[in-house]
Length: 268
Length: 259
Image (cartoon, rainbow over all chains, first blue to last red; front, side, top):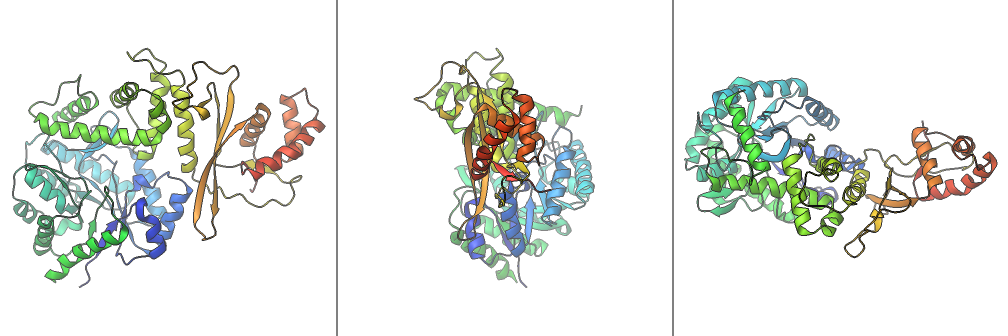
């Protein structure tokens, strides 16, 4: 079985990708970094799209925001995704605006009300986009409220919105250290049938009990172990390697993509 | 209002103004500070990259207090990171003119920010800006390069640097156009350059006319301009345009108009 492993597309190495067309199963882009970015961005994305499948991973939908859902943005997003024929759209189970944008991912309070509120907004987004929305379990450094557990919160949103999960194994690892829980138990408890996509990345150890989800370092061996465990528990799903800071040359990243691929092949 | 949304609003209030607002209750301060740092660093890095000259000519204290005020007082509507700079300019327009701040900022702050933003906007213009070929200058209908923006400035924003800081407005405003020129280089790679051009008032009128009414020929333009410039005859204007238009076309500010 051929396991699909993609790489986050960055402008830092975009021209290398166009020049050398390396063997990568798919690329992932953040629509917010490509929308309204001018003719050159569209031109480059067209060239990528001619040669590769592309997934999208949103940053600013702010699905859990106390502000009203920005439906005009969601409609622009649909035009963008249609224009580049991108079917997979994922976002963070998080929010980044409250009385205006703050441009960073904040933890939604883990309450039943909040979960239901988010689920209703996810349905609305799916209706406008005419695509499924995959929600990513996010990393967080302190919970805003724990009326229910993080796990129960995620499960409730997925069920009520009837949507899929983007399982970010690095985020599970980061959270397990930051909030002192067992990452294997956490992954085992997630609903297999909803896991259709995965993310893996590196993090930064700020203190022994505080990891920061920087996407700025190589993937740690503990996180590879979690990915292997997730495959065992839930079966195969495409995985994407994210790297957003301290970006090494493309050939170095491609070696890491191979390492991710080896995790799934070892289990096959 | 649901309880969870109150919590979120408290978080946002505190993140916008950690020194003034009370922090969310029952949350570890050490961990909250991580969010404070992440939010601030992210917004600051976007603004700093978008306004390098302004960041350089303001004192560190002025720059930091401006960023803090932006985060605290401005409610950004755009979800796109590329528009954070636009949000910053919108914020400056009212903030630097108000008396809300204890710190004063140079009188050119807003206009310099507008100027720096125009460069980014030119890059972000959605249309291709590859100059098409022109056969005959005289009978071609013309339009303005679709990325071109212009603005009048009361300060010489294009020359401002730490050693060259204006302390008073210019006696006459100046007009500056910013626009992008695209091409395919010898390796068939797409490349873009943003150009800046100070325009005289008559050229400014011409650009403004063509932006409002694309597709005019040189004769049409001479007739229309003479309404605004009665001191010149249509013939004089037409003669002038026969040199000006090819020059503006050479600079890729004007393109032949295609319907």
